Length: 335
Image (tube, rainbow, N blue to C red; front, side):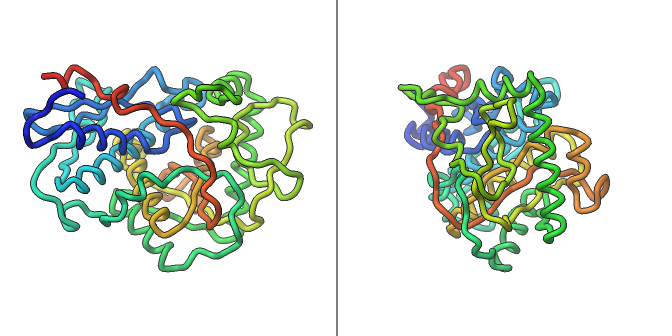
């Protein structure tokens, strides 16, 4: 690890970047890079456009959500080490790849960081669970806490009623059908799945994390393997009344996408701390007409950013992550 100023030791830097890398990302592409200026105690968070999805995410919205989630993890890690992170999103219009900077300021406290101390430990336990959940209901206080976490990051969370849930799952199923029939999207998705490779690559999705298959109730989870012969696709066994929620922002700009990613991760870490599991149903967000229909009132009341499935159940296997050393740029770190 490169040397740092006396106020920032190498172990803290590497652990903080490891925490950032532990964030979720679409298809586990991990589309981020980090830099550190030890003279100003400032982290830079950049997009890695070579890890974008040209067909699935042409505008880069999901990439920004992914990077936003990594920013939240970095904030939590900094606070764990006693710092108050001062965040700026899109700080340099002339440098569009620089998505955020975080300067390490004074000593951290709940009032300065805005989140609970136990979120740090949850970073290392949080991952997507594409396994079936139980039918246990989500307590109202927990829904309220999740909604408050989203609000603190500049977004809001909507838990639909039964009719709304049915509508959202139908939109997701339609998007899944379209994705399978779109040759470019199907091929792009399939490239990120690893089939029993050894050693396992540090990005993408091993076959083991994709969940079980059965012939009973269907929840429209993404078919990453992109089998285009639908008669060969097997339904997956999941809870019949899933608990889903939509994360919504008032506007739909790049900064809003970054805020939505931070809201997503803040909620997810909070859910993990409470023993909840989660997975993402992103398919309908990838089609503009379906995305517009995902709001509480279609075509109104903000912009849907992600559909989240919550529940109580098993952890499931975790996807691999890149080493902090591979995503920390030398240019800043070696000054």
